[in-house]
Length: 147
Image 1 (cartoon, rainbow, N blue to C red):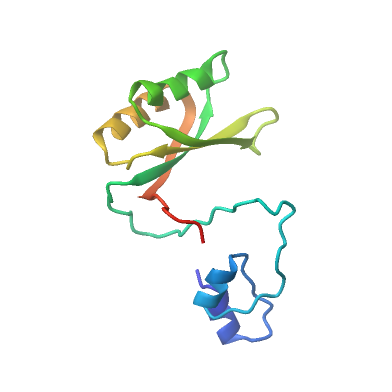
Image 2 (cartoon, helix red, strand yellow; image 1 turned 180 degrees about the vertical axis):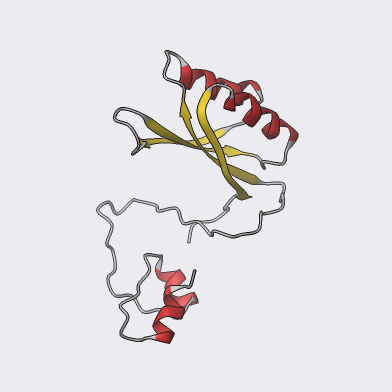
């Protein structure tokens, strides 16, 4: 995958762009085409750096997890309860239509801790038993500032 900056360097007329903070634009030598494109001025957008290599534990990490529950009463509570019993704090939860079958949803959670932590390993294993599907998307150092 190449960056917007690299695409522009290859072909200045390509029309490549990136949605990012003004600081990110300055750091990467990109000019703002449009500013304040949000519909809510208090909105904060999360950006991810995707890598082929796994991030090593930093001591202050998060793990992003994607799952679909079994289709039964209490299935979501069962999955979330696994993390509660393991003492793992969930800092974000969201759901989206699965895009596969009507009325099925994919849940996304962020959990404090690295996927190599013993408590996280055990929680992911137990939670997967309550899910039709569960994937640990990755672990990464927790952001400590907003750009």
